[in-house]
Each structure stands twice: as structure tokens, then as C-alpha cells.
Length: 163
Image (tube, rainbow, N blue to C red; front, side, top):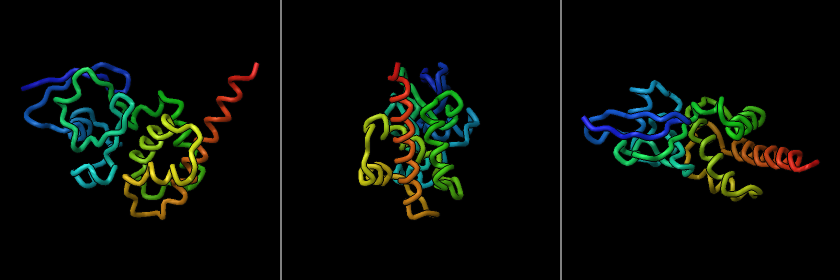
């Protein structure tokens, strides 16, 4: 048995595992966190997306051994993260949630993107989401949601800056 100590949604954990257990398997089977989905198991569809040290990562191809000393954020951190809440609200308001399978990965991808790009264009938002597959939509409403989230966060920033 091996172990890796890392931060998961703000709390330090020590994960015990055997072999090359992936973060996705650990999240779903040990932590009972079902937000990250197993879509392709090859890191191509984005359904398993998480943030590792703030950077978008595919949990289906991330082995636990690589997480020692790192910080992992999943969609389950939403109640504790204002930015995730704003993005979620934007997805709901834009009608960007259909079956919901891809939504957690899309929301985390949007967070990683909006942390890097505060004033995106539609083209930039679409490109940022291009690694996440959705079989239910044409992506228009998802891009609308990301643009709305960017606007909402900008408005909040402006209000906070006013005396």
C-alpha cells in the first residue's frame, strides 16, 4: 500500500492506494465524490476535469502518486467557492445544462479559463472549452454562460472597488 498526502477541496487528506490508481477512481470510489465523470478514460472528453494547483487536469489519467503536496479542487467544492457559484448560476440562467454529464467538467474548465482571462471574447471562451465534449448541445449556451459569468465577476469586482 502506498499513500499520498494532498489538499482536497481545502482539507488535507492522505490517500492510501495500490498501484497506479487514478484520481478519478479515488474520488468516486473512496471519497464518494461523483461530480467528476468517467467518459473516455483517456483524458480526451473533459468529463473528469478537476483543478490541480489551479490548473485544469484530467483526473482519469492523473495517478495519485503525482499529487503529493498538491491542491486538488473538484466540483464538490462549489458551496465553498464563490467563483464556482457564479459560474454555476450562469450555466443555469443560460440554459447550458442539459443532461448534466459534462457540466461539472465544463464549470471547472470555465473557472480555470476565467482565472487566466478576465475579459474573454466569445472565440476565446469557445477555444477554452474545446477540450470538453458535450453530446447534448451545440455549445452556444455554454459559451453564453461563460461570457455571462465573466460579466458577473467583472461587475462584482467593480462594486467592490467603489468606495
